[in-house]
Image 1 (tube, helix red, strand yellow):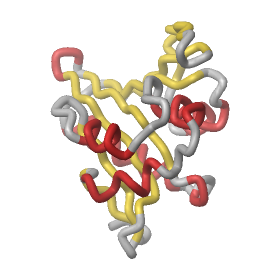
Image 2 (cartoon, rainbow, N blue to C red):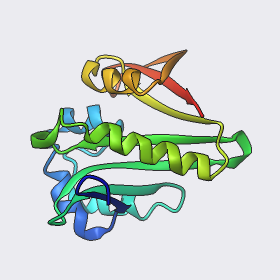
Image 3 (cartoon, one colour):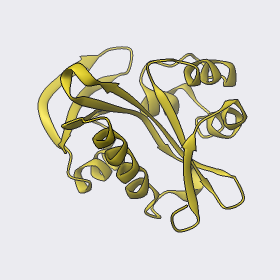
Image 4 (cartoon, rainbow, N blue to C red):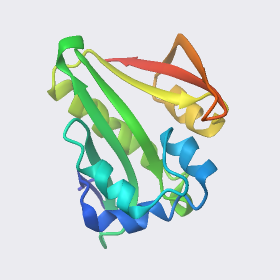
Length: 159
């Protein structure tokens, strides 16, 4: 537990709290790319079962879910990918993203990754600023995704 928060593996009981953070398809797209319309608890529960991605949640002392993300380790590339990073809307701008990114970096390093990568919609300026402050740099790879309505920027942090 750090400063009253604990990071742990996500489970089915976390789904209802997290899915409420994304009341519209647009808000879910900004969070997680390709998502169903509407995003549902059943869909997210299925995502938590993906054997290739490990979902985490940040919980406070009372057990309330404050944030979430997944990590996908790619040992052949010495890389870990960070995805679906989100903080509960009422808890943003309190330093929780920094705490979660530190955990992601530690987890990636424990898997012998040399880089931590992510993708973000370039129009999501708030999230991009979080990653910039954490030391991520744009790799120059940008792709347009019509379904997501914008350019997707690839970013990387050297570990």
